[in-house]
Amino acid sequence: MRFDTLIKNALIITAVDRFSADIGIHGGRITALGRDLGEADDIIDAEGLWVLPGGIDAHCHLDQPLGDGAVMADDFHSGTRSAAAGGTTTVIPFAAQHKGQSLRAAVEDYHRRSEGKAFIDYAFHMIVTDPNETVLKEELPALIEEGYSSFKIYMTYDDLRLNDREILNVLALARREGAMVMVHAENADCIAYLAELLTESGQTGPYYHGVAHSSIGEREASHRAISLAELVDVPVLIVHVSGPEAIEQIRWAQNRGLRVYGETCPQYLMLTAADLDRDGFDGAKYVCSPPPRDPAAQEAVWQGLETGVFQVFSSDHAPFRFDDPQGKKLHGEHAHFEHIPNGIPGLETRLPILFSEGVVKQRIDVTRFVALTATNPAKIYGLYPRKGTIAIGSDADLTLWDAAAKSTIRNAELHHAVDYTPYEGLELTGKPVLTLCRGRMVSRNGQPTAAPGDGIFLHCDRPQPARPRGEAKGF
Ligand code: URP
Ligand code: ZN
Ligand code: ZN
Ligand code: ZN
Picture (spheres, protein in one colour):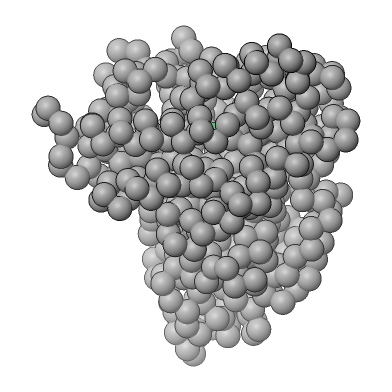
């Protein structure tokens, strides 16, 4: 057997194991693990490096137009280039339906946006904002069957949100069809109420975005999403969880045996409300929903990662340039917080931050790092075992880490199209030094080496973790 590539002397780390072996790659897949495997066209010596499954960023926004004219800085070209440079080999951005649009048209739109542009592999979650009869009866069942087996719903934002009855309808559909539902859980009326009070008292700067998006509103919506899912008997995943209030709801549900999953993001580990309070309009750089909270919330999020409340760690990359009339300054430097585009960039820094702050500082084991950043997202979104592990038959999506390398995050060295990073100056230990997607090198020493169009679209299976427990009420 002659391999295309042989990775020698690898310390392989999966979500459950660590072992030393050589990795034989043929036709983009891992075809052998062991010693003295044979000849290869290319040999990579991984002596002293850790070989992990390539990262899967299961929550990021690319080239997604927003209602009021804000334009995302990253499309499928710059976004996937940046992800590759940071050790990620698969992204799952969104194909967002706007109200009145057919879901099929939304998916086709995002295929046009991504065609020929991606450096790494990608799938789509749908965003369902208009669950009318046609969507529920025809479009969703067909699209789920075709490989779009997950979708996000919103409990807030006027142009996106579903009411509770609509949520029940889509949850029931997900149960019937075997899809995974992701929920943006914030209480829209709590936000509107607080925003009105803040406006009346003239408190309208970026900092007050965080006040309006309270952790109480996040807790209430998380609990409600969990209850609606329990009623229908369908698993659900609460995305971008910011602190202890929502975490407690998820843990409570998990302890009761419900299939409730949780996702968190780097911003909830590294940022706080104080960042939104920076001089002038700088706080706008940190405006995202839910917002970063306080140091106690950061600690609770770490605990949630350590104890297994969270299954998924994603970037929620939602890229807006700061100094730009189509970005954070859409409505000028004195904009009311309600008019600052929501979102923070983070595709390239997601893995290095969790590695440095989590693995190197011994808050989480490296096997849990792999589970959170690759294996669990692959399972939860129907890509496993093709993606998310190092096993014979799996795609050769591999990231080689130098666990001791030092670096400092500098926006000037990142490959996204955003003009800032929230993590400027953060010192890191541990670095992805070589990343392969289906056996092809996509980045080396933080520099992208692939070409647009190298990445392929992935059809997702119906995820096993989306199966109901068989206890629906009233069936
Ligand atoms: O503020 C955020 N997170 N913007 C991105 C959209 C979303 O809700 O995830
Ligand atoms: Zn969201
Ligand atoms: Zn998001
Ligand atoms: Zn606006």
